[in-house]
Image (cartoon, rainbow, N blue to C red; front, side):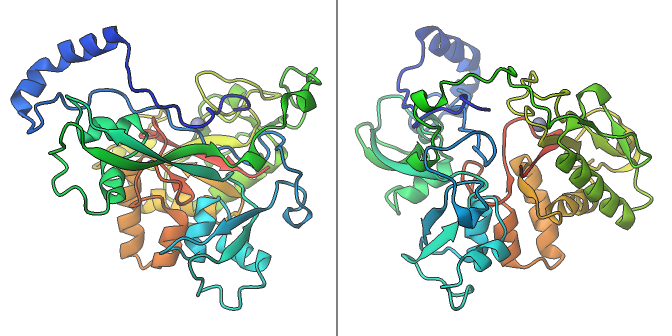
Length: 382
Ligand SMILES: [Zn+2]
C-alpha cells in the first residue's frame, strides 16, 4: 500500500466528456422511467476511490514513533466529539477499549468522557483530517451524485446540513451545501519527507519476515497454497482464530482461506494490499450445500450463515490483534442485527461495527470496503 494512498481528497467536478455520454447513453431509459423531481439522471458513476486505511507497520511516519506506543507509531491526541464513548473511539483507530483505558490513566471514569476532552491513542489505523467545503448545486446534479463526488453517503450529506434538507430528492440549482469531506492523513502520520527516504530498499519490497507458509490442516481449505505466506505472527493468529471457531462449531465445514501474500511479500495483483504478510482473505460461512464450496461465491442474504460467520469474526477479534476486518456493509447489517439480538452490548457493537454509521465513515473495526461481498479480509497488527 506504500505510496498508493491518495493525498487530501481530490475534488473532481468534471468527468471526462466521453464518460458522461457513455453514462447518459446507457442509463437514459432507466432515468426516463424514474422521473426524478430534479429531472436529473440518477447517479450512475462509481463512487470515488476511498482512501484505504493506512495502518501502523505500513511505512515510516513523519513524526517519530512514541515510547508509550511501544515505538510502533506516533502518539495521537484525539479530541472527544459529541456522542463519543471510549469504545467508539477505539474502533475508529483499530485498537481496543481496554488499551485506551490503560493509556489514559488521567480518565478517572473511562465510561464518562466529555466532548473536548483529550484521549491518548496509539493508532493502528492512522488518523485523518476532516475538510469543510462548500458545494454549489449545479444544473442536473442530484444529491446522491454530489454525495458520491465527495466520498459521502446521502445520509451523511443530509445529516451534515443539520435539517437544511427536508426532502433528499429535491435540491435547487445554486443551493449551497456545506460538506465535511476527507482531508487526508494527519500530517504527523504522513510518510517522511522525500529526502529522508532516499535510500532505496535493495530487496525490491521483499521481506524475509513473510516466509511462513500456512500449513495444511483439516480445519481449513487453502485456496492457493502458493499465495498463503505470512509473517509467523499472522500464521499463528490465523490458526488460533480458526481453532477457536472450530472448537465452538466442530461440525461446521472447513473454513475457506484465500490469499495472504506471496513468499517474501510484495505486490500481489489484483489485491490493493496483501503485500506484507498481514492480510488474509477468508470465506464467509454459508448455509446448506453452499457451505462446502471452495471458491468465494454464492454469498447472499439467504445463503449466509449469520451465526457462524459472526462466530468466526468474533474468533478473529478475540485475538486482540486485528486492525480491521473488511466486510460488505449489507453483510455488516445482518451480522450487527444478529449480534445485537444475541445481547452484545451497544458499546461493544459501536467498538466493533462501522454499521450503522455509514459505509464511508471511519468507525469500528469491521468496515466496508468494495468487493467484500464474497469474502472478508483480515488485517493483523505488525
Ligand atoms: Zn483481501
